[in-house]
Amino acid sequence: MKSNLNSKFLLFIVVFAISGCIEEDLPTKSTSGYCFASNFGQLGQLYKTSGNQQLDFWHYGEYNNLIQRFGVKPDIFFYDDGNSPNAYFTPQISNNQYPDGQVAIGLSWIKKEFANSPTNSGVSIAIIMAHEFGHCVDVKYSVYNTQSYKSELFADYLAGCYLHLKSMTIGEQYVREVANSFYSIGDYAFNDPRHHGTPSQRVACLMAGYNFSKSRVGIGIGYSLLDAVSNAKNYVGQF
Image (tube, rainbow, N blue to C red; front, side, top):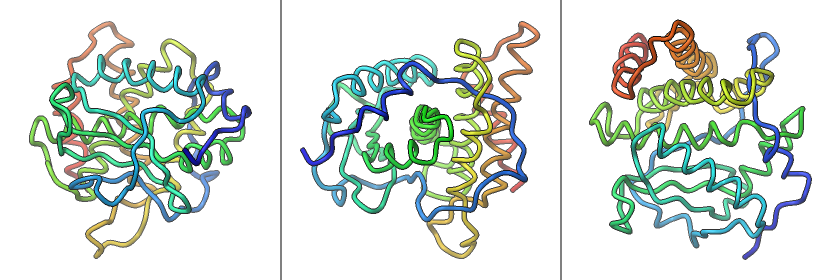
């Protein structure tokens, strides 16, 4: 296959953590964003390997964690996203062993996240994956069930919940870095059906999910996936 990841991109295998966010320091937006797709027909060849054994080991370990946390099982692939870094979810099923659709993560997107990672850890990649799993949950529970800016913000909220749960194991150093990544893929194309929410909205939903999870777990109550889904829908409803 065309893409092999440089060894510097492997630091995130041993470094994944999260910490505080100050919006004034967030970067300008990029032109790409995580997307809901009807099918993967336009993505070209899908791969089960990145071409790098260590990256694959981390990737499928994170995938298994996401299955446990989100209660869904989509099939997952890499693809060559060329000059258009992106990641996608589709509800289309290609293998009955994976009843909740498919997720595709672009190899250029992975490289882009490392290039924009001040810690060279690529910590945002796991949360990008969580965002796509958020779309999967959206479809399973018929919350928005289609591509819209609210479905994107809903997925951002659930990704924020995962961000907190992940931080409980690894630490809270890098929340700012993850928030920067989400801010960069917001947009102001309000009349475009591909509008994903503004930069501020995307960070707000990510951090609302993070804070919801932290508030429940921090006082020993905990929460179910359906609790997160309900709170995410209520929060996104204000936008």
